[in-house]
Amino acid sequence: MEMQTDHFDRLARDVLAVAPARAHDLARLRTLARRAAPPTVTVVGKYNHGKSRLLNELMGRDLFSVADRRETVTLAEHLQQDVRWLDAPGLDADVAELDDSHAQEATWLQADIRLFVHAAKEGELDATERGLLAALREDQQRTRRQTLFVLTQVDQMADAAQLERVSAAIREQAPQLDLYPVSATRHRAGVEGGKKLLLEKSGIPALQGLLAEAMAQVPQARRHETALLFGELAAQLTQQGERAQQQQQTLQQRQQQQRQDFETGLAEVLEKVAQDLLPVLEVQGIDAALIPDSAADEFKLTAGKRERARIQIAYSRACIAIRGHLVKHGVEGLPAAQQTSVRSLDTVMVAVMGVSVKYRDDLRRRFCEPAGRAQLTDAFLHYYELSEDRQALVQALVEAGQALQAARRAQQSLAQLEAL
Image 1: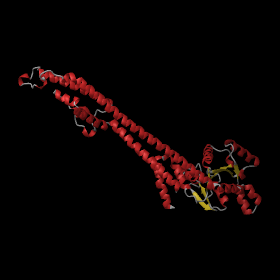
Image 2 (image 1 turned 180 degrees about the vertical axis):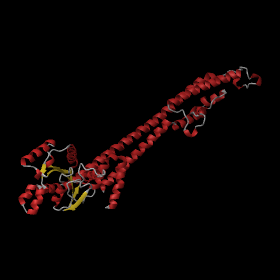
Image 3 (image 1 turned 180 degrees about the horizontal axis):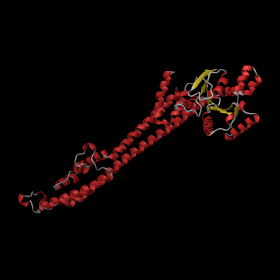
């Protein structure tokens, strides 16, 4: 059993990684996996309402501590007559904040049947009791775990009329609620005195009969709840897997479309740049830009200087057109690993294009010849893939893939859990 429990926990962790909000359901399934375990009856209610005394009478032995103060602050249990009896801390107990976890454990994780206890002398239900009772009724409809409302300490009522008034007030608070009035004091007196009428009047034998009927239904209720929880979990994991797969596909399509848009736009920009450069590249006769200036021409505006300036202006315009496309797609700054201490140089344009050109052959080779265009395209695509936006998309794709793998792993683990 211990090895199987460890195996259950390992598989459950895969499911929890994807569906952490279903921790309670998995904990309940862990309890339900012990199919041979005896039915568990949990008594819930506020302290000093006779919970422990009721359990003792139902069991026929004083196994649970009884006191007129907050005595039960831990999860007390006893196994008797093939029934596991649990007495949890009272709803209003507050001891080191551990009592509430014990009450949750007993009421929601361990119980097959709940005995909701309310002392008749307290009159109507308070807000805490009403809230818990509503939750228990809702859970019964969903899981078929039964809740029996037990009105205790009815011997402390002045007469039958007062008991009826209290019962009617409670029924008004919780319509269609079946009340089972009991008196542990009368039952104990009947047992010790051998008084059959007093025993019957205590309501304990009738409650024992109801409990026997409820316990007979526990195996079927457990099967129903097990199938229900596995079904809900499977549906959720399937849905999450489908969402993760859809997200992955959407991101992949976006990734492909964005790259295609970048490549197409870059090709159009480079083509336009090449066309715009044609007038600059056409030259009649000797290309003055190739004629070097002498020392005597240092402060003169020569034909060579004018041509080289014309070439540089054309180059700058080409760079402006290309940079506009890069900025549009978030490709401007260099990756952190390539950055220098000079911020103005840490741009993709400087890294790929340099700062200036002097000759027409440089323009022609870079923008008009296929090899040059291909080289530019490859370089800009390289930095496009390294851009922040692109890297964020890649990371989102990785996470979507991981989510899809986790969902599929969780589905497989859930199937193995169901087969245990």
